[in-house]
Amino acid sequence: MGRYTGSVCRLCRREGEKLYLKADRCYSEKCAVEKKPQGPGQRTRGRRRKTTEYGLQLREKQKAKRFYGVLERQFRNYFKKAERQPGVTGENLLIMLERRLDNVVYRLGFAGSRKEARQLITHGHFTVNGRKANIPSMLVKVGDIIEVKEKSKESPKFKENQAQAAYKTPPEWLEMNADNLTARVMAYPRREEIDAPIAEHLIVELYSR
Image 1 (tube, rainbow, N blue to C red):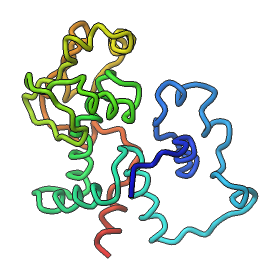
Image 2 (image 1 turned 135 degrees about the horizontal axis):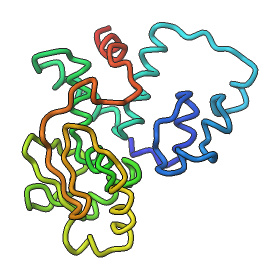
Image 3 (image 1 turned 90 degrees about the vertical axis):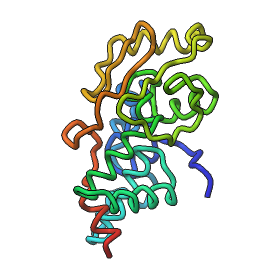
Image 4 (image 1 turned 120 degrees about the vertical axis):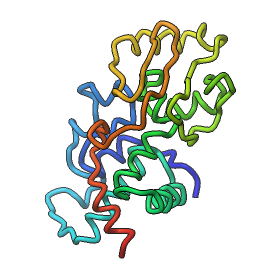
């Protein structure tokens, strides 16, 4: 199955909360969740659905996939890797998703959304440790240096993003230099540093069935 190309605001409405998929629009009065808090489609209006335990677990998985912009097969592979790692499986899963290059670029403020970050990365605007990095799913490691390519820094888009990044505070596990559009991975994120609105234990329960 290909990547979702429909309205991302519809995805937020389906989950009943903001997933911050559309950059500045999510922080404005134009946000679809603010204007239409009910789920998409006529059938959801004026009617309560009884949610089963399985339904809650499934919705949490869908929310996580949409929040980070990954497909079903990718997500399942992340979960399998998280299971094999020492520690808490759910936390391992979120930490891996946070380490994705597209998420890191977004967290740093170099892109307005994860979708925009993926596009900028695939177009070759970033380097990691001095080497071209055009794979959004690449997992960064401690000590990695992420930088906008010199040629790209002169583009109007990155000048705009640079101004926005100067006012954005990155998470503690990332160190950013907004003036040079560079950053360093100082540590792996801890669960308390991840602000994703996800109950990861429900995802673990789903895959444990």
